[in-house]
Image 1 (cartoon, rainbow, N blue to C red):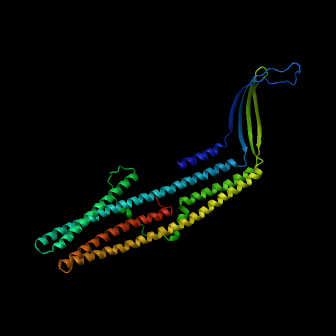
Image 2 (image 1 turned 180 degrees about the vertical axis):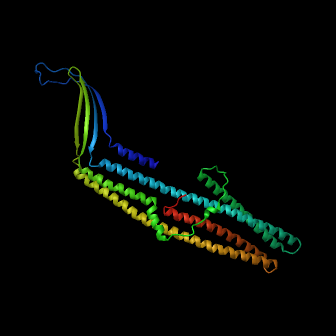
Length: 387
């Protein structure tokens, strides 16, 4: 809507260059008879009796010289239209990032279901094995209950994961305009990250060059500069070609038809001599305000890029740490399971090792997804996100 409004403002600025035309007419009844004396008639004869007047006029005015006010208005409206379009593009980039975020949440929930289901199968099988051992008197009842409790905890975790997936799916479907019950399956291949990363200085340069909001302010500054020129034009007169047609009828006295006139009109507002200076000052302050806004936005953009860049680097480090943690948790579970089979580790130690392995697997999956989101956030704050 804002883009359409800006385009309409441009069209309105163009239309100001078109001729102004007007038509007027009146019928006047004179309740009191006026005294009319014809200059070429004798005073003793008296004038005609007049009690009504009818007249009509048509006027056309074409601007010839306005000290470029109209052109400044057109150019200013165009700059403002570009600024509105850039702001709309900036909003689109935020929408893209929101969509990516929704996809990441969907992927996390979907992956969690798979990992928890896998762990639940292991937990259920352990309960079966422990039940047989307990029946044969080879396992304490307390150890069996611990295994059953862990299986119940994993079932609850699966319910939570499935609920999160359903909510993430509904959110994604609504964003994409799909039916709420549409089943979505995330594709992991889309989470690939670039092998090389630019330097922080490169990303800052990209942001200051590509960000739509700072470019929009640049166009607004150009429009404001034209506002100064337009205000200065108030010192000069405006000239227009004029034309008109007049017809009148005063019964019993006068009838006028085909009274066509053509001329040149000059208009100068004397008050501009002391009012224009204030308008120029206001226009200059407007430019100064926009420049200060550009400086503040530039600093804010640099801060955003720094934060996004450091968050992305941190997310990559987390992936490395969690990958090592998975290796360690896997080895720890293998050793603990071997010790348990040889009666060298307790049931609780085995269950703890199993929980630790599941948690590290979930952590590394979430870290990969978060890193992809962090990279897209970096692209968004540099104005280079594009899907």
